Length: 415
Image 1 (cartoon, rainbow, N blue to C red):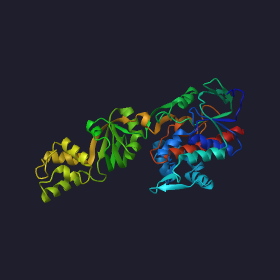
Image 2 (cartoon, rainbow, N blue to C red):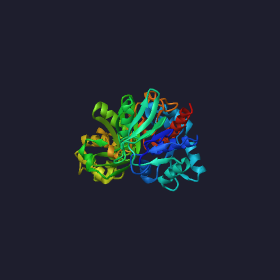
Image 3 (spheres, helix red, strand yellow):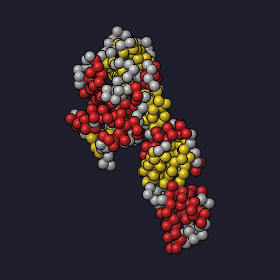
Image 4 (tube, one colour):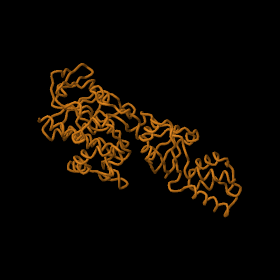
């Protein structure tokens, strides 16, 4: 299709939650944008999120929400105030899209269908989404944005562009192409790293437990002056650790290992149970039933395979509580209470659900999300160097930033 002669006031690159939200904001100002999507269907990351259910937000207040994004979280304040979760919930409810709160924290569509969110935004914005349209260049002159160039040679004229192309996470869905578009216009790119991804651990015994779950474990990571704690159900994998506690640490872990090489990660197999707890437990069992195997005692609190692995690592695979040596006893209690692991990174990108890094925030105005370098260029969503953990953080940020970018683009177009 030849669309060389077409002109739109605004072109949105990317059809995810950020792009959809931007289109809705523009439509509310009677401005008809065009969404260009390089894949053959729109919003595939949105549709895949939460196992297809889409955890789109959570109950945290503004300040607590921003803190989850680290030291740069305050950059979000304008967008969150312009389009808080209350706006999103009101939008859904006013159009009969019911929501549900899981574990008194996570918001999902009550239908359990991410597609309902996509359908609602498309319907209410009336935006045209053209798929299989890869943008290879954002055209700009001394006055700012003037159009976009597509891979098939097509040129589309426009006065504003909202770059909502996401990052390079998720196998088959993520890409560097949106980041390269911004970079080609002079924007600084903070190196992308996997976030919301499995942790990579060097110790072979961790991989030997692949498939085993710790119901309530705790992880601790020291990064400079900051200490990060996460807690919850943890899954051993062939290459390390997964589950919410691991995924939440992934962005910080990837960044730390990128800067320092390997790092130390502390695993408590049962959250809240330190070395003193395990010492007291073994002492009590030695008095009550000295013939009992140590691994059986540990199995009251840990999966049997984990208990057996710990005993093997501490040179007491067949020891009884009464004959457990002092050295093995101390080693075992320290490991169970806070085992030091060698963290080598996070990922790979194909298993990451988000990206850490992206376009430098220093070159984006937080009040409008407009580029400080190119008039008429706006950013929304994951493409910016701002990433939160699991739990609806990144999708809420995408919706909020998309709405602010769309409204700001509308203001720009009226000048």
